[in-house]
Length: 174
Image (cartoon, rainbow, N blue to C red):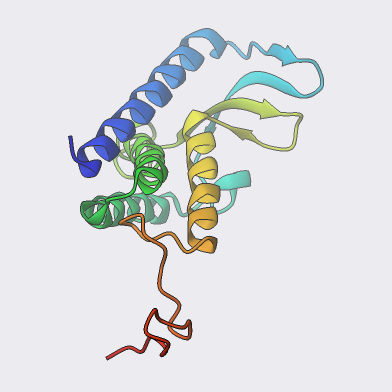
């Protein structure tokens, strides 16, 4: 299977695991129940978030719907150039998290393209998130690392335009 196919497989796995965990959270935590996982650090409690991280932009849910749709389309387009296993993992997790949030925005109450994201992992009262958030955050950090190391989508190091070439000259753009 080509890297693009593996990216899509990983994205579907992230999406399905996130949506299944949200289904569980809605059924198990719907009555305001709180489950302590690591006392004082991690607890499970159900929230429906109309905004972005930290509930920013609660009145602009439709903007987040458009942003998630653009992210999904952009990642799917860029992913066609993949030749790197590392970028395949990074973009697959990013695509899965963005697609899962897009599904929440499109199909959860209060209505189409205005849906609230299901959050249930409370990090010591600092913020509440979900598994898609973990995939998004981790993959964004991985993208930054790959970019900082100069790894291109095809897995080769990006050529620094001022670096000496094997012939002794410098690389130039045409």
